[in-house]
Structure formats: C-alpha cells, structure tokens
Length: 567
Image (cartoon, rainbow, N blue to C red):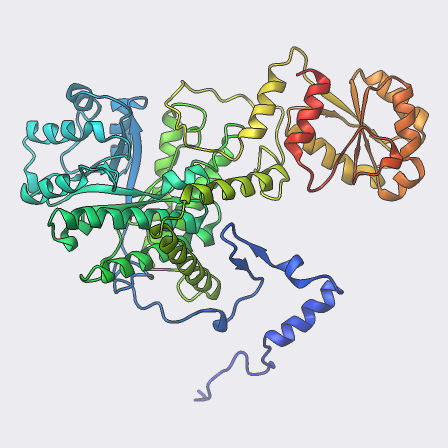
C-alpha cells in the first residue's frame, strides 16, 4: 500500500472570494449586488450570500467555559422537555404529558388561584417533576410552596420555579427566602424575552430588554445584601424561538455571551445563563393550523441547536383556543423525536464554526449590547419595539414576509378547526391576524364571495398572473373563478356577465396588456361590472379601478374588495 497522502482537492485550483464575485457579476448583469443578494434583519444586520473566515470576529472559546457562547455544558446532554399547561388543559393532560415523556410542567395560572385548584391540577404528579410557574402566575407562588409542604417534599428536594418578574419589588425578598430556607433547586425570577418578542421586538431588542431586566434583578439583590453569584443562579432567561433557525441559534448563543459579560462586570465568576426557549406565539396561525407543526419543529430544532437548557413547544392549535389531546401530544413528541431519535442533543453547539452563524452571533451580541447600554442610559425600548412591529407588519402586508397557508397558498376548502375558548394574551401580536380577520369576514357572508378572472389570451400567456391573482384573492377568503382565457374584450365581458360575480380581475402578460387591457376593462365596465381590477403595476391608461401586484399592500387591496362585496 502506498504511503502517499491522497488530496481530494489537489487537482483543483483554489477559488477565493474574488473569483466567486466575478461569476456572480456575470449572472447579475449589472444589477446591484446589495439589492439582489443581500438582505437585512430587523436590527439592521446585513445577511450576506457568502461567508468566509474573514467574516468571523474571533474565537468563541469552548463549550462549558466562559463566555459560554458555545454552550453552558462541557459535554452533550438532553435539554428539558418543559410543556405548558393551565386550567384549560386540566389534570388529565398534565399526567398524559408526563407519562408520554415530558420532563417538567410550566403552569400558566391567570389571576387569582387557590391551593385546592393547584392541588387538583397537579394531582398524581410526582415530586421529582419540576413545576415551573410561568411569568404572570405569581399569585400561585405560595400555593405551590404550601403544596410542597403538604405533600412532605423536603425543601432541598423541591423542584420548580416561581416565575417572578425581575423588577418585582418583592423579588429580592423571595430570593433571600429560598436561600435561607434551603430551597436549593427552586428558581425565583424569569427575565422574559418572550413577552418582548410577542409585542414585536427584534432579536437584539429581545436580548437587550431581557439583559436589562437581569441587571435590574442583580441590583435589587445587591441592595438586599445578597450574594450575587447565588442570586444569579436563581434567575432564568426565557427567549422566543422562531422559524428563522439560524437567527434563533445565533440569538441563544449571543445571549449566553452577553450574560457572561454582565456577571463578570458584577465582580463574580462569569456564569452560564439558564435558558428556556418557547416557540414563538407571533408566528402561529389560526388558519391552516397544521402548518404550525412545521413552524414549531423548526423553532424547536433551532433552540436545541442553539443550546437552550429547556424548551416548550406550543401545540399547533394553541392560537385557536384550548389545545386538544392531539395538539398537546404532537407538541411534546416534536421534542422527543428531535431529542431521542434525531439525537440533536448529542452534539454540542452544532453550528459552531459555521462562518454564517458565528458572524451572526457576533453581530447580534454587538447590536444588543449597544442597545442595552442605551436602555441603561434611559432610552425607551417600547418605542424601538413599536417601530420594529410597524416594519414587520409592512413586510407581512406586502408578503415580503410570507405566511404559508394564510397570506400565501391559502386553502379555501380547509376544514374549520374549532377549540374551546382559552385565555388570550393581550400583548401577543400574531403576524397572521390581518389576513385572518379578512377570512373571518368572508366566511360570515351569506354567499361565498367570488371574483371573476378576466384572463386574456392563451393559458401560457395569462397563467402566471391568473395564479397570482387567485392566490392573493384566496388570502382574503375570495374564490377566483378561473378559465382558459379569452381572445376578445367582448368574449371577456360576456363571460363575466354569465359568472354572476360582482367584480373582475384582468390577468395577462405585459405585452397582452399593451394591446388589449384598455379594451377589456372598458368592455367589462360597459357590461355592468362595478369594480375592475388588473393584476399588474398601476397604469392609469388602462382604466382599471385598482391594481394588485407583487409588493402591493395586500390587506388594503383585499379590504377594498371586501367593501365592494359588502362583506
């Protein structure tokens, strides 16, 4: 056998970024590189089409070592499957989740509660199962402590968390109580980034806001004379996991780096951040809710790959109402499939070394730290979030940020999924809401609303815009009456008249429009059509009453159609 070393790339000439750019410029043919190939996050971070080692700022260390960018653990291990429950789901669902593989329960107790109510909800739950109170459930804290005492759970064996807000005036006292009473495994406070994400915050805004809450918590503990290292160990950070898997992974990595920097600045050993990931509520839809399974699977994978310590996956039907057994089971099993069968947890920081993720982590950490410093100086986070929510809403409206099954590829024949009503988070701003309101209005109509597609020319000529128009109309609950196409304006007008639809949408190619659009629009109006749209960029010479096109404000266009249809 030869001792020669085989070099698989030895026969090929090494290519660099310059050579790649030459090929790209040939394809772009003069089009702006930044406009065609570079996008931006809502924090203004540029997403390049190609990353190299030169784009990464430096060494992020090793897993389990400060600054913990690469993870809080030295070796791989399973994350905690923490599933959410409330009064609406009930005791049977809690027990089913635990018997099916869930590790911990997050309880959402809204408003006042009683010990008896909590005792019933947790009846049969072993003392070895952590009971985490969700943020906003502080009214149940002493009921949970009383329940542990009633069941004879030793204080050093009690497992759970109180979910207190870091800025709660009583938080330092609660930390002191858990320390002096030897509740060694009970977390006290939660810096809730999910709340900010639900309001519309960007990734850096979520990081900066939760970091500011964490620092406020440390200040309160310091003023109370508590050991900051011990106090920091009683704080958990809760972050939203979204459908952009790389951005989600980078966010969790950046969050650990930022908190390590804060703890070091506070004068004690840099600490690993406790992270709880919750699949984003903003991305969930009521229409075509089964697509939510795909969204939550991507989000769960991203959170796990990003190093989250605990993950909560929302049931696919959570946006509709109280989830049923199927929704709860799928949510739990999504985690178990990723953890136990795909073995995602066996690899520490799988994105580590990816030039893209490393660069994105650096950019997020830098941006979030700068915003955190501004917040410390008195800047308003609410104003920043409001601006981001407006920008994202515009992207949803123009479908630059598409929502599958809602704004894109809606199914008008989908069976309606109904669930019992449940508590609604008033701070949650779901992306799909404008389109869902239009669908609801259309469903409430006595007759299903329709729009006639006045397609000009053969199928090969009009099909692109006919399909575009049908898809856009369906997003507002309006069924398109399609056809093979018409060769004359009179044929088009007669077909519209026979259709019984009150509106028409002219669809064809730009070339066909130049020859026939004006005549077709005029013929339709002369036949009695009171509202004629044209699928294409606005051109007053064609005489249409409105235009639908790529990049238009879709809800606004659909609202105008609804008004014409008197929906």
